Every structure is written in C-alpha cells, then in structure tokens.
Amino acid sequence: MHRNITAMYLATQNSTAVLEVMKDVYRLINNGVEPSSDDIASIIKNITGYSKFNVDMNVVDRIIEDDFREGQNYGIFGTPGLIIWSREYNRGVVIVGYASAEEILNIARSYMS
Image (tube, rainbow, N blue to C red; front, side):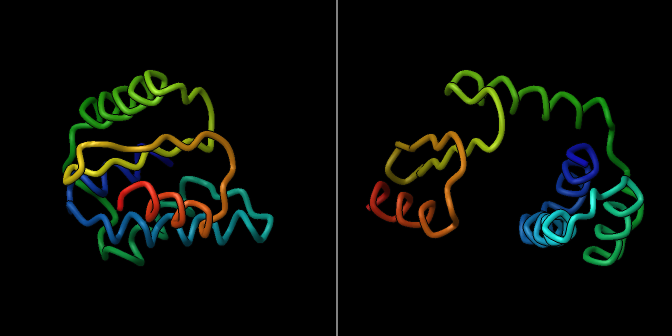
C-alpha cells in the first residue's frame, strides 16, 4: 500500500489525492475490509484517473526507508506516529500513539501558534 501511494504522489505531486486515497482506504478498514493491492490500485485510479505511474520503485523504496528512519530518530517505532512540523516557526511536535483528529488539530493549533 505504501509503495503504491508513494509512487502516486511522486508522479502527481498531488497531496490532496494522497489524503483522498487514505480516506477511502480507512473507510474500507472501518467497514471490516482489509484492502488488497487491487483495492488500492482501484482507489488510486478512481481518484487520479491513472492506473500506472512512470516511477522508479527503487526511489519509492528509498523514500519509505528514509521516512521510517526519520520516524525512529523521533522515537516512533510503530504506528500510529505523526510528526507535525512548521517551517515558518522552525519547530514541531511528535505524536506517538492514537490521537483523535480533534486532538491532533488542537495540538497543532496550540503548538504552532
């Protein structure tokens, strides 16, 4: 799943599409469906209109590995883990473990203001 979504982002540079794909994936999971790679491909095609991306999968794997290592550097060794960073303020916060969307937004608003 991560490889497909990362390849999609590299090809399209469309972060909104990534969010839409993730929403559809989690909608399946919330309904008790474990999404297959075909499900992910179908979701990506429905959202972007593309079924294949001209992306070097070695680059995709390296990006995923780099993200994994960066998370470990911040003490994230499992999921969920989230890093919120503000380039404007040059600071951020690490959230490890479950937090509701409302809690994450409140943390981001208070920490980044």
